[in-house]
Length: 142
Image (cartoon, rainbow, N blue to C red; front, side, top):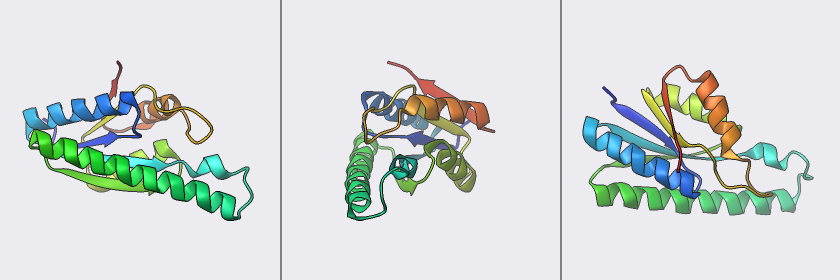
């Protein structure tokens, strides 16, 4: 039924559960998994475009690469190959754009993500994706 699964990850416990769920689905359906980490650049709109912005972006870029690397390790451990995508922009829209680009037929994401000054709550992202997705969307809760 599912051939390509897109999972949104941000390092939160909810996104780790979403990744685990996506891996389980991929095993059942022998599907491809694509994991996406989106740097929410809207968070920087109030910061002056100087080295402060560059430092914040660099930290989130590094964090994203580390989180994606751990997702690859989880997929490898489960015997499921995983392709990673590091994007920037509005997280919900970037997930929908990526789903269209790769031909995903299932999107998996957590109901909540990290919060704090450096993150946008993924809860609003999951709401956006569920509302606007043309493909099946699974919201994983703890």
